[in-house]
Image 1 (cartoon, rainbow, N blue to C red):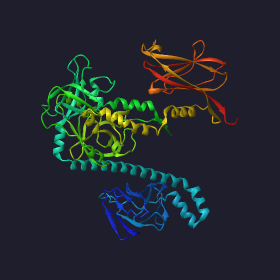
Image 2: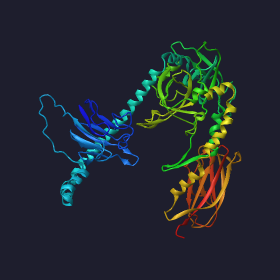
Image 3: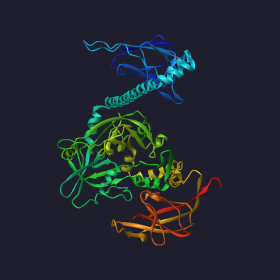
Image 4: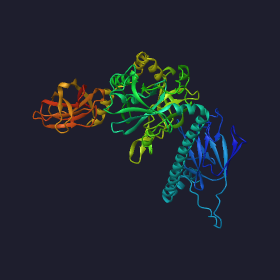
Length: 611
C-alpha cells in the first residue's frame, strides 16, 4: 500500500491510497493522471512526475515540459529523474514552496520463514550529494567525495536511473496499450449490435480464380446497391490496368484467359457472384499525377522528403445477379460527414488476410472480422489539417492489414463514413514487413462521400472543383529539385570552406527514339548523351533530377567511352563528383526506363568562401 497525503496547495488535506499492484502513479493536471491538480494550478505541469515501483524501491520519474524537466524537490532538495526516495519523503512541485505532499509506503513482505534483510546503505544521487556537501563542508568535502567515492556513486546512480527509465517506459507503453483497449471497448459498447450484424452480412470477400481453379483472396467490398458493391479503387482495378479512370461501370474484361474476379457473401453457405463490371474514382489516377507533377518536397534534418498523397481510393464492382433486399449499407449524409470529430467511435468489418494464419480458407467460406477503433485525426489527402469540407482522409486506430482494403467503416449511426485503404506497418525480427502493426496505431480510410459521388456519376465534376483547393495546398511546399539538390550539394561539398556555384542548367528527355536493349539484362532502356564542356583540374558536381520519380542512372565518359565516374543507385536524383584531367568535351550518359522521361541537369563548381 502506498499513501499520498497532500500537505499544501489546492489539494491540502486530501489523502489517496493505492494498492501494491499499482506500479506507476502519474501526477499532474491532465485528467488521466492518478493525482489530478486543478487546471489553474500553473506550478504543476500537465504531466509533472510519476512515482514508479522498481523491485523493492520507489523512484521518481520527472516529466519534461516545453522548457525542460519540471521542478521537483524531495525533502527540500531538488530531485533528479530516477532518484530513489524513502517512505515519508515530502515532495514539492514547481518550486521549493510549491504544492507539497508526503509519500508513505509499506515495507516489502518477506517470504515465510526467511529472516528479513538488514538495513542497507542508501546511495544518494551524485548531484544531490554534492549539494548537501556544499552546504555542510564546502569545496573540500566535494573534493573528497570526488576522489574517494564519486565514481562509485555515479555508477550506482546511473544504474538506478537507467532501470527506472526502462521501468517507466515499459509502464508508459502498457498505459498506452490499455488506453487504446479501453477506447476500443467503449466503441464496441457504443455501437449497437444490430448495426454490427448488418455490417457483417453486407461485407463480402473479393478474390480471384485462375484458369486452374486456384483462388486468391484480394480484398473486401460491401453492398451499396441491388447489384453493386463499393470497395477501394486499387481493388476494383483488379479488372484492368490503370489508365484513365472509368466514369461509368465498364466491363471487367482485362483478366487473363480463364480468370475470374469473384465476391463471396459471409457465412458457411455464402453465395458467390462474378464481377462483370467495375469503375474507380477519376481522382485516384489524376490526383497523384497532379501532385507528382507539382513535385512538392520538404527539407528535414534527416534528409529531403517528398510529400505523399492518399486520396480518392474508392471504386465500384458490378456483379451478375441481384443481392437480397435490404442488404445494402447506407453512406452517411454530407452533414454527418462534416460533423465527424477526433474520438468518434468506429466499427469495421473485413477480410484481413496478409500474414494471417490459415486465411486461405476464406475463399472456401468467408468469415469477416469485426474491429473497433476511434478517429484519431481528420486531414485532407496531403495529410494537412483543413476545414470539414476537405477532411477527405480519416485517420483512425482500427486494425488492418492486406485484405482489409475496401472494408466499410461505420459510426454509431450505422452509416458508412469511410473505407479502409492503407495502413502504417512497423518493424519485425526480420526487418520492416507488411502486416506488422505500427506502434503508432495510425491507419487510414477514404471518406465515404467519394463513393456516393462515384455512384451518382458526379465524381469527375466534384474532383475538378477540388483542384482549386489542391493548387493552393501544394503551393505551400518547395519543389523537389531544389530540396534534393540542396541536400546533394551539402553532402558532396569537398570541404567546409567552399560554396556551390551553378555553372550550367539544361533540360533533356528520354523518348522512344532513345530506346535500346540492355545487353546484360535484355530489358528495354532509354539512353541519352549530353556533351559537357569542362575545364581541367576543376572540381565539378553533376546533378541530374528526373521528373515523375523516374529511376535514372548517370555515367561520365571520355572520348573513348571509358567510364570515369558513375551513379547507378540514387533513384531519380543521381549525382557524381568529377575532376576532368583535361579541358574539353565530356559525355554525360543518362539511362532510364522505357518510358517518356524529362529531366534537368545542373553542373556546379565549388568556389572558395575566402576568395
